[in-house]
Amino acid sequence: MTPLDDQQAMSLALQQARLADEAGEVPVGAIIVCPDPLAPSGWQVVGAGYNQPLGRHDPTAHAEVVALREAASRIGNYRLPDCELFVTLEPCAMCAMATLHARLRRVVFAAADPKTGAAGSVVDLYAHQGLNHQTEIQGGVLAEPCGELLRAFFARRRAERRSSRTPPPQEARG
Image (cartoon, rainbow, N blue to C red):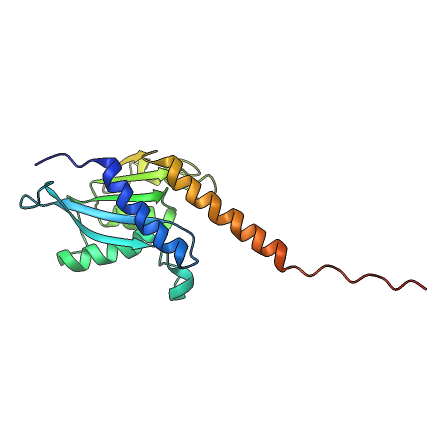
């Protein structure tokens, strides 16, 4: 089996993030791959997702959770011990615990999240030795293009908020 190329896999997650951006969601995307000896690369994408909490009215519809749900459904088991997650932004605490509960072998993320990152930026849930499963973590794969997509999204949002504010009325002069 050929080792999975992390940059190629992250490129697929970045495609998912672009779908989130087009939908007006925070542009985060994720894919889950599992070994498949019949696939030319030795790996198969079994789950894909992008952020959808706004569109689905679901606070748990983060890219990682959407991808986990699809992968678990396709495999027929919520445990995915041979699988790997590629996500364009460091997982939050909810997503980190979901990946640990799914028993993923490895989580690879692109951009660090200094506000809610749970793989070392704010907290490191993956390093907690008291948990019954340890998942390998790697950050920084395609961090620049993934981070740039996020920066551009939030810059557009700030500009939209500024332009939608109505200026205060002028006082009458007499």
